[in-house]
Length: 385
Ligand code: NAD
Ligand code: MG
Image (cartoon, rainbow, N blue to C red; front, side, top):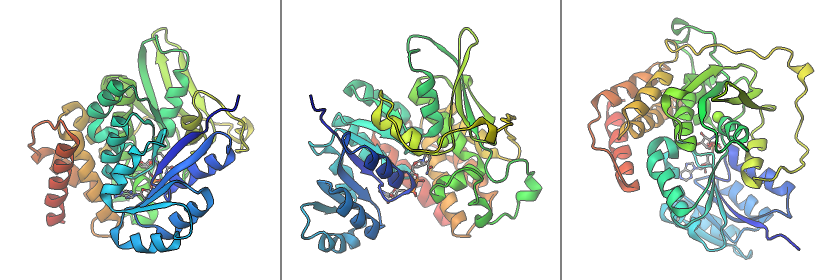
């Protein structure tokens, strides 16, 4: 019997994860059909992807680019939409089975929530969504019978290590971190680093926001919070270990002391594929891990003094309520300002810490409330930069 192809919406298809997801999809034409593609501003790449993958619909977030995309695709049988509302609504299209959110930042919150409410399965790269509103997202997913499959490599490793273990309590999650481009450096050496230095990640090639997050270790902090919600594990049981080779993607310790891990080369296509094909493992042509190339796999403690963002993420998550949302909003604005050379490297944790200390919002309970806090934090910080 012929299997029905899984119909996928890829949100943020023009980014680092989005383009790699399309590479994965094109390897398995019998398994997947691209139903929707969305992008914020890279209209040319979106048009090119639309012509190649022939989705039912595409959305360009920036209104001013709508006519350009519409005209480029006028003789194709593809619906074209523009604007923020369309970005959020398109996930509800009846043809969509699964939504891969590869949007960066809090912009993913509304479309992922809409997708969960519409009972679409979720493949999630967009960690900020769980950082900001993990309780709301995971509770709604549970109520709607929706699974959230992790795309983030560490969470995919944990998910893979948990296969067959769902009844067994987890005693510890150990999330590995590469340490980023500034591993081993001290604060004094990093006071004047430039964005070019921070963007030079040793192991991974990624979008600019997550690359800066990797340099500050905020990325690991966001991942700790992401893991807490994905796997219902309390913060005290989630540890970070620096593993510069990025081969062991994360580990789970069970109650008997046994530790399981998933290993592989640092290549996001593998976790993307697993999220899309779960529970199947499908043959691919990706480069394989050879231990002779990695004779030393090493592990060390993170340096919380030099990288205060990791501590701030734990603190915000421990405080709960609006704090993870404040943490994320402050981080997004600060990283954007650093990328525009408006602030220095250590202004990033300084801005976040101040935002956490002064924030005074009651605990949000809806996407709208989260987005309102997000906006207020952004406005306050922007006026002070
Ligand atoms: P990117 O900057 O390369 O791509 C972001 C995508 O989101 C683009 O397609 C862009 O059009 C879209 N986008 C940006 N702003 C938007 C908005 N306001 N509304 C709608 N769409 C918008 O980012 P990336 O590196 O692919 O990361 C995407 C997400 O995946 C992030 O949450 C990141 O933390 C996570 N992630 C990325 C990697 C990686 O290797 N790149 C690894 C793990 C997790
Ligand atoms: Mg990761």
